Image (tube, rainbow, N blue to C red; front, side, top):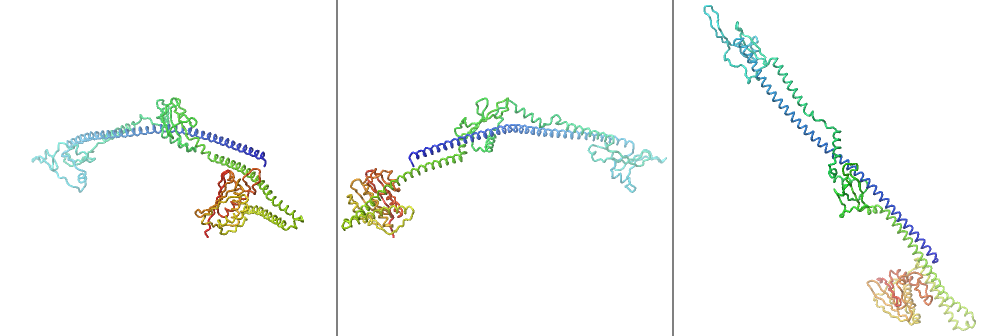
Length: 609
């Protein structure tokens, strides 16, 4: 991809990402405004409902209070009427007793008067009981024991001046008294004697005569009617208290301008109503609220949900408590929500999370796309370098083989066995070199596909180091390399493929030799740590920057040395080294400083078998 195309795509994707970001911000802002408007509407509806309920509660309280007063008054009136009726009845009883006493006197006088008349009309009258009357009035009844006092004229034998009485005889001064009146029967019986011939007889006297009885009855009826009239008259002056009277009284009280607003509001009930209505309208925030006068800056009651008790204008709502009151201060209910913004943002949590998530996904895709493009660009450049290096590396042995092959066509050369042998050795060495290059490339490909077979055995790394250094003796001597060998590890046996482990050592030692500007100085050391073997290969060559150190294990990457091709290779060696070490369950690290050298540290687990 051309650099111009890359920057064009980058700018285009950046503009698109910024456009999406701006649209998301606009969408979130609109959603916030919509939620804020909805919140305001819900709060205003809540306050309107609260005010209506407070007004109804105020009216209901007046009605209940007035009704309770009326009930108490009616109860007191009923109690007073009961007491008055009781007094009237007691008075009636007392008057009845007086009438009864008076009547007894009248009856007593009447009976004594009649008794006097009977006594004057008859001789020896005697009051007898009803039982005696029945006994004497029957054929076989008892006989009367009579006592007679008489004067007899002997000459003419005529009785003169006689009197008769039963015995015992005692003439009381008064026949009937008040004390005995109650025990008298309805009809009094007298045993009397005819004054003319002295024959006995009976006289009946009613205890109460008809005229008196009618008089007494009429007096009782009049007294009873008077009692009933007086009882009926109680409470007639009190008019019945109707529902209309109650409404009129409550209306007058509600219009009374002298009643202050704090007496018309139950502040505790106001708080309960406010909280209940907020919950009904799905508002879970705890508000601060206060009641103040509408015409004066005077706070009557306040409840703060935070310690500061601030009423911010943008989060505060007001409404008159008694909007229809034209004569008195209607009062103002002020409600504020200190955490309104945070609550709305919390309510927009899903929207914000989805928007932020989408933006993060887009940013990740954008970043990953740029990273992939850059990586592909680098890989493309490295592959181009690899092809150039591979062409250069393959070109040299091929050219050498071609030259040697053309020389073999010369008859003079073929006749000279020494020259022929040398040319054959050259062709063989170059073929081996060419095959080594090809095998290295194929090994990397097999490692990537997981097709490289490892022939793992117990390998003594101290001995393997000596063997690899011996095989590289000519290369190292050609540059007069200085070697420092410190194989101090007592345990140096690991489990791995000897061939590939030797290639690892070869690559690292070869790099230390190639990337030294002056005479190479290479130090190889081994040591034990816990259950691992540590192999260090250090040089004092050209070194690397930190950026280069992070990339040296990437495929096709080679530390740049300018436009010169004095350092041969494909950029596959260290990638191959890393893969082989990982196959052996080990690790490799590099530390380097520009122009001071590089140190590779390999850690392999010791073989316990």
